[in-house]
Length: 448
Image 1 (cartoon, helix red, strand yellow):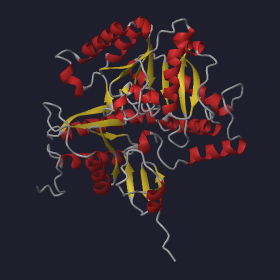
Image 2: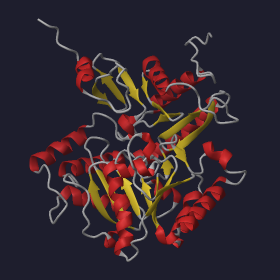
Image 3: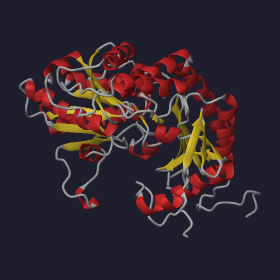
Image 4: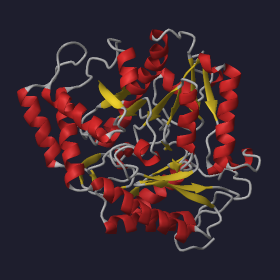
């Protein structure tokens, strides 16, 4: 009689993991979670500093959310909000979202995930202008380095090209430079905001404002290592876009619901986007859900347009989201994120200041990035595999984090304790100090 296969063996046989090469055989089968800790099938405990794909704001194993899902499912599993039907949880959630959003937000459309919602926003930005008598406004601008999901529109917004094996991409999409520290060599000695706003102005002049629909961006850029942009950047960009009739679309899939230290990153900068896209922390990953928050002008123009899909406004997902917001409010997690994130950022910056491979530490709230480089003067890429740093943090320190595009990204649950925060900082500091500019990794004892 054959020995039953382990869950890891069964996974390797049937599941294809995005971003994981088929040659990688290691698996960690997570079976349980509580707070900021998860356990695998071998009994190993891991401190979750990547928040299960940056979204488990209220932590793992929350009975309040599980009970909300059960109560709603027993009463009503789902009714689509595509037509005249709706549900009480969807209405309540929409009201609560608008109450916390910038004051110009007037309506909510529901979707199932951030990628789908970003795709809706892409289409609605063009449709808005077409219905207002400006059908030539079809160009979409985006900030270099931002992530906007895995639909084709998101790939186009991220600068994917036809030579990447995907065939023709969506036309009339243009990227513009962002005021990131890693772009400093391109600023020609100018102030980062001055340079980037002027570059945007030149792009508008080149394409013609009358041909541009919108600018898409993450207000705090998760893709390039949780990069908080200069305080004056978004107010100046917003003013420039508004003067030219161009919509501002904030992709707050990562940043919203306390992740950045406020309910919305738009509030941090004091700007009023025309569309805000949210997902991830809206239900802390306990149910798939996303939403588009629309200004009154946009909502009026696209009224009746298709979007959102069969599961948009899912009653159980909305009930879970309402319970999730209850926890965030009751436990003061927005303020907690701002305060604890500030302390972690300061400690990381201080303890890594003299480490040659560290370029800078960025972020706000509990979305932090430690940017690594082979040469601070040139910003050269550190020649080390992303999986190497991930595995050291995981296997040597029991911390789950993601090294992505040159940055160790820390996005833990907002329920993180002080002791857990200190442990994450210590693990990152110990790991990074072992890395040499040539990409080699010193032994744990420091010997070379």
